[in-house]
Structure formats: structure tokens, C-alpha cells
Image (cartoon, rainbow, N blue to C red; front, top):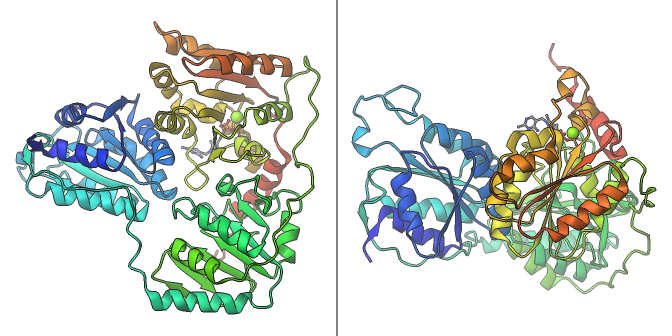
Length: 558
Ligand SMILES: Cc1ncc(Cn2nnc(CCOP(=O)(O)OP(=O)(O)O)c2C)c(N)n1
Ligand SMILES: [Mg+2]
């Protein structure tokens, strides 16, 4: 087989397990799309726009560990930057590949379409650098292999997105044949002396401390340290809490699991456990204004150890040059076995009684019925909004997955990201909780779920506005134009019939809608849940007050 630059890239994507790539056509990428289309073992999945394309790839990476999105230059790539920045924030290796102007035009002084009207086309590469871990431009076939390999390997090692642009006349240019490449991540160049010092300091610190507590953070999956975290908890006989954005990263059926730690909106009893601990170990945390509830839940004092993906900080000293996996494996091996911990006998904190079947639907009743959908093969996406707080109330069976975007927090992310995730994890049950406000940004991708016959169940929470924003600070800007969200499915169906749109205004109607959704194996079912705008979780209200106060801090220097 004679390789081209495009089929070299295709071979690399296949080698690292990217069986599906997401694309939106544009004249700068059509020849490249042909190269990928013709490559055995790759499937090309089309999106409605490049924002959704970048989120679909991000969702695929959540399922498969890595993903690729193909867009056109300028108008396409700049629309995709939002999903790529989100992938950076959420530690997901998405390879953004952009078609680009003919290599002969570089330095020609010519003005081209889809550029900002200047003769220098570098604006795009410069915009991609801060939101990727590697950004390369390919204007010749000779350097294509090294640039493609550098971008992909760096993305896998850093668990961050990378950017590759390929000139439209180079995509089908003859190229070298690729050698092997696998999805494995090279361990950081581990510094044995530093690792030993970190372990010695940790063992000394733990000596005499008999109430350890582990708190799991949202970078644990990207650090590929979920199993080592379980092993450590079992060796220490320690209770475990998860930070909100890490819910589902530690099995909730494990006897050590005690709930979500989210400051004043934590699950009952969790804050007390942490306050009573004399050795709080954070694993791969992200401390931002939302996760610390306006900086009120920041770890402090000598009872705290923070183990990041590539660094350990303890007793005013920091150690790096090794991976979290190396550190946890070695620590667990050296620790003496402490007593096993018993599962809590406390009942599930969220356990509301069903409302009368014909009573108006409530937030609690909706969430209670969603709980019934959670199985070990369920992947639930919870969008920015009260959906975050509803998701926190759910108990997850072993192997159930909860996907959140709490660092970037782009409303509308959940629909396209779920689309990509469902493409990458067919056979699982896919459920989305998304508010009316968020849905209006990226609704088109439901039509792609119909096209691909994905049986995604979408709970569209119609509470008539931006309720999470109202909880922070209300105003007319939080009111939105209402849609007939269920009716959209008829619009998206066109000549297909696989999409199903249903209204649920009572508990009985919701129960019936869920039954129909489970039976609809041929396509998505959108269930429009009508809620009173004031019917939101207490945790959202409490959290919103704190965040509002933090946002409103007076300037120190007037
Ligand atoms: C792209 C983008 N633009 C604006 C925002 C700010 N924002 N965050 N949440 C919201 C409202 C979410 O409203 P809904 O989806 O209806 O959620 P609910 O809280 O359930 O009403 C906004 C407008 C955002 N997070 N992302
Ligand atoms: Mg809303």
C-alpha cells in the first residue's frame, strides 16, 4: 500500500483505537476526509456544526480514551476551539485536525477565504497553542510523520488535546509508511530518589495517625489511577469520599465509600468524617471556585496530603518526577494492612416517597424515577445546571458512569458529548439530564443521534429558564424563549422515524414515558419534564448563595 499524509494519519488513529472520527466538511478538508474515509477500520461520523463536533470527540474520548475531530480552516476550527478548550480543562486527549490553505499560498501575499483577510494565516495556530499540549502545521509530506506522531504521543502522555493542520494539497501527497504506535502512555521519566523521598515522608506522616480519609478528585481517571486508589483504600481500611466532579470515579458499592464531598453541600456526614480525620489524602483533586463552593472548602493544615497526577505535596514539601500510579502502587505495597472498613449502615440520603401519580411533576419525583434507570451499564451525562445537583443525589451501581464537565462548564456540552460517547460505547445505556437553557445551544446533535439510531434517553428539564443562574443572581437575562422541546423530535425526524418526543407533566406520565423510552431501541427519546421554576434542589440554592458571595467580593484595591 502506498501511504499518503492522510492515510498515515488514518493509520495512527486506528493504531490508538480511534475507530470513529467526527467531522464537518469544508473545502480545505475534503481531500483529507477522502483519505480517512477510504481507510479500512475507520468510520467517519458527521456533526451538525464544529462546536458539536469538538464536543462529540470529547465525549468519545471519555468512552475510548482518545478521539479525533476533523474540521475546515478558520470558520470550522475556531468554532471547535470551545470544545477543545473544554477537553483541555477536562484532561481529555482530543486530536483536532484542521484542513488548511494550499501550501503554495503560504508566504504568497494572497488573501484567502475562511481567513481573517490578512496574508498571514498563522492566527489559527496561535489560537490553538494555549488550549492544546501540542500544535503543528503540515505544509509538506516529508515532515508530516514526525509532526503527526509528536502531536498524538504528546496528547496521550499529557492527557490533553493536540492540534494538527494539514494543507489541502498535502493530504494526498505520498508519505512514509508508519511503524507501530499503541494507546499506552509513557510513564513520566520517573525520578526514583524523589519517589523514595515522597514515600518515606508519607510513611512517617501516617505513623500514629489512625483516622485516615481519602478524597478522590476529578483528575484520577486521566491519571489512570482508579484501581490503585481502591487498593490504597483497602490497605488503609480508610473511608473514601469523592469530590463532585469525580462522582463515579470510585465505586459507590465499595464498603469504603461514604459519599460526595462538596463543602457545605456535601452528602450527610461526609464533612464530619473529614473534620474528624487526622490524615486527609486528596487524590488528583481540582480545587476551583465551584468545587470548593467559593473557596470555603479548601484543604489546609498539616493533616492534609495532596497527591496530584505528577506531584505529591505534604508538610510544606513537594515531590515530583513520578506518576500517581507509581506513587500509589509503591505506597500500598509498603503500608501495613490496617483493619477492613465496614460498609455504612446509613440509608441512601436521597430516598423520596413517590408522589401521587397525577400530581404535578416535581424535581424529586423526576430524580427518583431517573434513579430507577441507573444500572451497572448506564452512562449518565449531567449538564451544567440543577442537573449537577440532581446527579449528586443519585446512588450509582458498580460500573455505572457519570460524566460531568464541571471545570469548563459549557452549557449545551452534554448533548453532543453524549452523542460522541454513545458512538464510542454502544451497548451501554445512555441517559442525559439537561436543562432547557443548555439544550438550546446544541440541540441539533439530537438529529445526529436519530441518524445514527442511538437509543439515548434525554431528560429535558423544562423549568422555564436558567435556574442555576437564578440561584447565583437573578435578572431578566435568566428568562428564555420556551420551545416545544418534545415537538422538536418531529422536526428532526423528517423522513426518519426513530426519534421520539414525549411530555411528562406528572409522575405517572414520566413513568409511562420512561417505559416507552426503554422500548425505543432505534433512536433517541426526549422526555420533556415540566417543572416549576422554583422547584430546584436545596443544594443548588445553598451553593448558589456561596458562589454569589464569592463573585461579589469587593476589589481589594479601590
Ligand atoms: C456557553 C455558556 N454560556 C453561558 C453560561 C452561563 N450559564 N451557566 N448555566 C446557565 C443556565 C443553565 O440553564 P439550564 O440548562 O436551563 O439549567 P437549570 O439550572 O436546570 O435551569 C448559563 C446561562 C455557560 N455556563 N456556558
Ligand atoms: Mg432551566
